[in-house]
Length: 349
Image 1 (cartoon, rainbow, N blue to C red):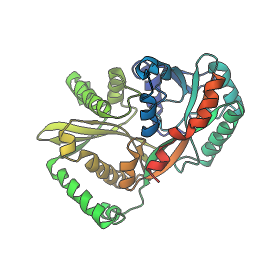
Image 2: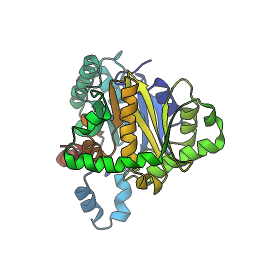
Image 3: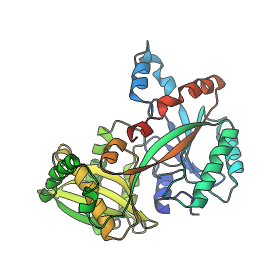
């Protein structure tokens, strides 16, 4: 089946279900929507000030494990949005999810439900809003989700993109983009012969781990089997932009093309070379150029680093998380603390 809200190939979702992230379990619900369970640090999406206050409380190191409950999530970490089945009425889906998982898990989170997304159809947005309303009737708490970065490919060339920035920002970006002269850039595709070489697979996975390990948020660690399946799949047709410096791979982006949109999913880098070569900035404009050359309508740049992406001209569309807490006392406490878990809108305001 094809899910609604789907901005990635179906094979990527199947890969997630077959090879979930490390220490995760994943499956399809009775209504055919992806679900997974994992230990979840409740402070993961808290604002820095609130997190620091909690961590300074007496004996935090002894009781912090209580802030990491085994949590059930409706969704997938490889999809931009909650993947839903509109063959099931939204009210029924909300009831079924609560009946199936609310007693079994202390926390049940329906993650990343889109809100009036410009990247989706009216039908998809309507169903998502009906589901939010239905979940709230079932006692779920509404929490602001993350900021998904995207750009319309509404420019004739990269110079036109630069014209939208201030003079000082244009000057800064052009200085950083001089690093492009030191790089050899190629486009590969999943299923290419090189991805059947174990040494190549090891290298690509290590570059992914490099980015994961330096990230501020550690949640879903994708596994080597997941990456192997992704890179060797001819049907997913991933577009892999590679960056070499002095004949050495220093970074890559793994993107997909869905609904004529370029969806940037995974990045791998070698540090400190990637920083020295301003690879993050270079890859942003290379991706925009590629989307323009291929005639794509949008570039979807993902959830991470919203402040940096805002400085690069990204637009943002937001989601909601709907959270059900089994313990009524904790439920009442969270309702009072919701504001501390809704920081992305402030970052891109």
